[in-house]
Amino acid sequence: MWLTNILVPWYLENKRELPWRKTSNPYYIWLSEIILQQTRVDQGMAYYLSFVENFPTVNDLANSEESRVLKLWQGLGYYSRARNLHFSAKYIVNQLEGQFPKTYKDLLSLKGVGDYTASAVSSICFDEPMAVVDGNVYRVLSRIFGVDTPINSTKGIKEFKLLAQELLDVKNPGDHNQAMMEFGAVQCKPQNPNCTVCPVNNKCVALAENKVSVLPVKDKKVKVRKRYFNYLVMQADGYTQLNLRTGKGIWQGLYEFPCVESTGEIDEKDLMNSEDFNAIVKGDVRLKLFRPKMVVHKLSHQHIYTKFWLLTTQGHQNYKTPWEEVLEYPVPVLIHNFLKEYLSE
Image (cartoon, rainbow, N blue to C red; front, top):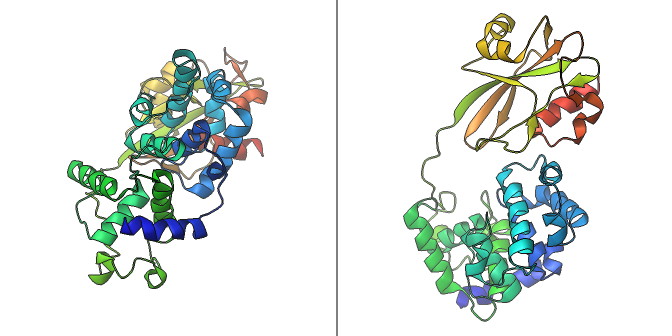
């Protein structure tokens, strides 16, 4: 209890004014938690406000087309979050008769909801005594108690969850959890925290042992894969071609121009001689590189090296996407950035 007795008063005095802290509606809390996974608050705020405006209830979200959900999510990344959000909204409306799950166990039945989100929603909205462990909480616990078990290891995940649960104020779990997360975000920051004004600096093992900069510990990063995309931007009588990405890879449910993936950077001759290019492009075309410099788009586990090739043909050759409608499609931010530059010329 000693930690919650320090951090909850700190939280009540220092917390940021955030819109999802002004409600106990589980739909809004769930929405904010999904958006803020892998996303900073300053980046996620506009998306949260947009979703609340466009989908004020879980029924509104459930009854929307997936393409509209993905369009509003565009630029936020990790698009499986948006697809899972939409899927779970339909599950709540159709299978649970619109009743939002109220317990940790029932929340785990929602697609895309794991221990962290279930703990957050159940404790903040329904006072269930479940401790939240996110990146901020890992950092706070690791530093205060000097725990050097890697936070992304199976052992570390169990160890930190146990510790967080032991420290939880079971009578006020919502404020306790929010205090822990806010303390990590605002005070016990990843880089250069101001330990001189920290309310727990006299109990912090990391500070005493000069380990603040090395805790928490993470196992080595996963090797990043390099991929080379050559997008074929069709230009023909006011039409182009956007294709829906299917399958379980990146950007599922988003649209993109026809793409030739190569093993490395290739020139115009190699592109036009490739089997994939000739399977996509029929007849005579004129080919021009939009920008000579490759665009590098970095994802968590892969870096996409990209060229956009402009193809001009006579007639629209069954291209089905009018240029005037292109911006209505949900596309990866890589395509979106290209379109902004291309259409402004």
